[in-house]
Amino acid sequence: MNRSIEDTSIVFLGAGNLATNLAHAFYRKGFRVAQIYSRTEESARTLAQAVEADYTTNLADVTSDAQLYVVSLKDDALVELLPQMVAGKEKGVWVHTAGSVPMDIWKGHVERYGVFYPLQTFSKSRLLDFSEIPVFVEGSSEKEVNFLRQIASALSRKVLEATSEQRRNLHLAAVFTCNFTNHMYVLAERLLRRNNLPFDVLLPLIDETARKVHELSPLLAQTGPAVRYDMGVIGKHLDMLADEPEMQRIYRLLSDDIHRLA
Image 1 (tube, one colour):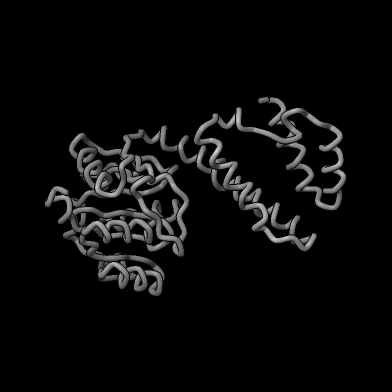
Image 2 (tube, one colour):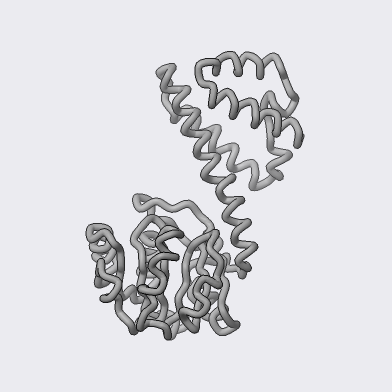
């Protein structure tokens, strides 16, 4: 790794799921995580101790001499706190990690800025290997793009550039792929629990469904009664959901759309 990149000092503003994974990833690669900021002292202290960094819960105490500031906050907090965050630290490179926030939110506040967007679902309790996680970068100039590409390439083998509009669509696609899919697991678990069955009996099915789309397009991988529009099975399932009108509505909506596309 280029020594100047490895020596980059990084401050994290936020200590949630993504910030925790990203700070650990940088730390493991030898970067200097200088400081963690969070409004919650326990979160800031826990992450800081794990990556040998200082921490603060006061924006005024965020160090002004870091080279890279990574902001991983909720979208509304990012907008609200932005002027306070950057005050006196306008010379560093500022990036956010949000899928739906445009890069130009930084414009007029700092000179050097961009976006560092890893496309993955993160939890504090699961520290992931970033090598196969796609990281999308955007920068205010070619200089910032190249800098962020070098930083990202130290973590991931899949570094790509994406405009704010492309990233918005990536985020939307990710919500369908991850969040909505996981909600289906939540509903499935409810059905199983009602009948004293464990959720883990579905894990081989979940795993095979995910593996198939590595080899087939999602459209070709689709199976089930909705593809062939088997109204006998569909009708029985809808009857079984008579006491769960919201789940019944979701079942009907998804079945209709699966058949439409098939």
